[in-house]
Image (cartoon, rainbow, N blue to C red; front, side, top):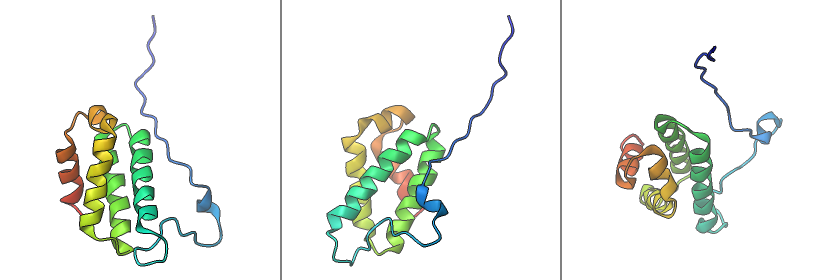
Amino acid sequence: MTGVPYMLIRRATFAETDDYSFSVVRYPHYESNIPISMGLNTLHGEIIRIFRNCSLFEHFLERTRQLARYFLQIQYPKEILCSRLYSTLNKTPAISLKYAVYNNDICMHIIEKL
């Protein structure tokens, strides 16, 4: 019986806007006329998307930190981001189950390096 050598498969999340010749605003600015709930719901959805695409906990942390840093750049208060992050983790127990890490620990890992 022959075996298949262990292979690492890498994949990227497709973003059709990457090839556009103009910039695309993906997330509303905190001080725009768009309700804050729209931006926070987008944050929630992106965290779920990252969770589904990242097999390794380290990759999940890295991508979620990148997302949080972007929201900080567009003036979302850190307290509100942390609150939404914790809320997302509580509403989605599959995240802590997948990575075998408590929600509080996940939040601390993300927040400590923002």
